[in-house]
Length: 427
Image (cartoon, rainbow, N blue to C red; front, side, top):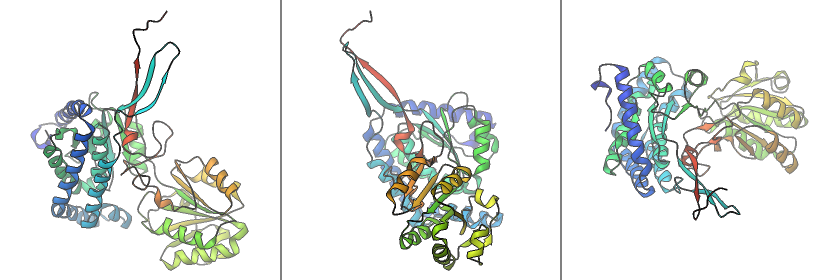
């Protein structure tokens, strides 16, 4: 069943009941067939479409409150839901349902000389706690990905999206019920009390196996500091597009405009443009002029400002800031080595791209940049689980352990070994 906050006298009792219900439901979900889990995800998608008007109305409450609070345009864009976006959320769930089942997949198998047969098999993690900000579509994506991977989940979105998240969760709950799955396997924390996050990060008495935070620096820092269980972190996107001296400038212009301006509020947006000094006389005016023509603010280093006087002088902090707005940092670099050095110092390990027709330079960039996603002649806006063929993503992991890059259903599993023999005993 869905646990309601209003039914409990204390937050402690509520969170304990929430954790216990998800834990129990997750055990049942782990044994459900892939077909049944897929039917549930499809039913969730259908219910989200059916509840479109109610979700839009709930989102309007959040949007109005966000404007009063003075949320930035980027935050409001992330928060906004309309019929097209709600349908896109449902389509994302349909895509997840159509993916191969990760649970039970055999990654590798082998046989030892003594006749023992070994298999490495994907299995659910258990219960995942998800803490996130702003984007209500994460509620649906995270819930569906957890169902697909056989995991229970406890979701806690930001207070700015509370009405939108709860409306989406209500539709998802209806879908789970209609498909015959226990709706308790996807729970949403129905209070904005910050202490609820603390309880979740503590694991709720062993009910939770993994915490996944998705949001800004402050959220990630708090989760990493306070969590008492493993964390799969999704840090900010301080992404770079480097225009190498062997770039096709026509291609570069198209890529840079898309990488920065297609949607400025997504984590795959390019925040810093690096331009090779060898082509600066031509490239700076062309690329920055194209950006400015689309109302993008240019913040450049001293060399950039000398070549393009309309640019504002960038500070050191600018190169460490995820603007999530129509603002781009620009720096001239003396070749590939300097670009790699800048990215290593200022990047967040999210997504970085080289634009060049030099295959050797591209190969070295792809090899040497230590980011979750490294690109060649590609818009950084493709840093998205759907574009990778994962159906959707629970976020972009920037760490190095368990999962890295877009985290889809297969990345929300762990593994076990199955060993089969014909009565062999160890001498």
